[in-house]
Length: 275
Ligand SMILES: [Zn+2]
Image 1 (cartoon, rainbow, N blue to C red):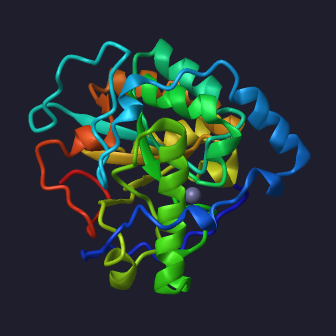
Image 2: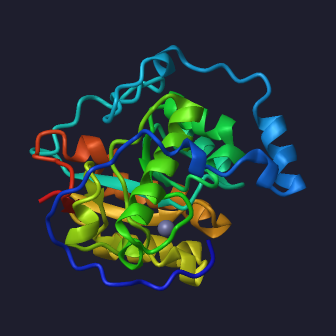
């Protein structure tokens, strides 16, 4: 997505309900896609095997994603330094390259996906899940939730969850509100944890891989959640150096769910870092 101004990100706790049914009628049909998008979709859906785990879909909360990459030795984030890399607004045309890099470095990340983009890269989404990355919900088309009615908020979240479920069989069990825009009314409508961030690389703004790394390394601390965007090539280019420097500083790179695995991590509540 192009430049995204940051709206208020004041943190607060509250509760909401993510209903996963009744949203099919709101989904964008393939007939609404541009010709190029339809073509991408047709190509991407060839020869794609749906993983066995995709057959079992719980009503609300997704199971832990399987690990095809060898998981890092069990990391205890209570005793060791941990950090979560998160990538928003995809999937996009650079996401496969990012997945290649993460695979090479044996690192798993968390992706906050837009429902409108998911059908354009179904194979990428399935690969993401198969390689043990965490799939999160970033709404259908990136509206600021605080400016919407309750029905519109529910629809933004539900329709995106449905798209991700349709493609991967997994229901995202965390969500990130676009721009970090949330309030108690929004929180109350979402029954999964709202995951924000404490390290904003501003990668979408400056498009400078070195600056992305420098900001992240100057602000990161044990328990941090780092915000980046895999729809920008410059952000993906920053990843090898960022991973190298984080590892050099002794950080274990984990998914968001892993970061909070021994903590209370509940719906209708926002989290900007492990505390
Ligand atoms: Zn976003």
